[in-house]
Length: 423
Image (cartoon, rainbow, N blue to C red):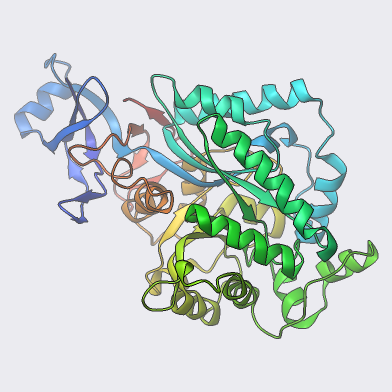
């Protein structure tokens, strides 16, 4: 049994309610990392623990949190670190992906991936919603799930294809990749990429296949270019596709998220996909949300049973020099999650660095709220909230230390803040 203490413990949830930070708190964990209890040290115990006078208490300067859930990542793109130009917009980013994705050989890609798998484990990431376009990450996922400090990976085999005649063959190949992961003991299923990279037919049949697994991840309203393409049939992304003689999605006059929901409705004719309120069942992770609006929020609420809204701040700044309207999302009480995206659109895969970015641009949001997004909401999106996401007895969420926290300013992280998994 270990009793781990710090300046503050942030349990996230206790007794089904949002928990406030516990000053001089502690968490007890057994040899398997299962939470036995949480509480507070007395003033005397805290003073003695800080002085190293209590052998049964490990005391750390900083805050103790549950393990992080990275709600959106492309770990197989880790070899592209430092290769992309910033602020190109989505059209420019797509051009770079097409040009550079295969720029490193297989051994180099594997080495880059393994480094990030180790980083996740050491930083305190306990679960990842990971996007794959091939099977190159599967061996690492199997290996790192079985180590002493395991990380859970749900793999979304992402499909795209703009030409309707290719839809069936694209889906078939995607299912074969996902089935290969399943055969290795990995939770894997196909998922659609976005409105602008898929023909309506491929978007519909892929969504239907994804919903069979109960989980769907989707790049939603990542840029104004995407919105302009769907609503008006114009803009840089539209011109990019036309310039490459590729088919474009229909122009609807509606937001990109409304278009996606319409396609979901087309793919969900069977009642097995709908709940008693006629909402589409399944955990649907809408990723990025840079240009999400009240109109699209209302559409999601009216049509989706359990939507999650993942943000990837550093990636959004890297590509678009823009961030999601977080205050609008918070005002609507959306289930926000936090991800890193990939090293093609980010300089580092680190939840702590994403939190620093949020602290800088949204200083009024308390760390406790952001950690709810980074821990519990991410666990819910992956169906792992009974095990992960909060420091509650019976769970095995991981125990993470964040150092160099400014306690006097809404627990903001500082430039030197880092995270480390303790249990």
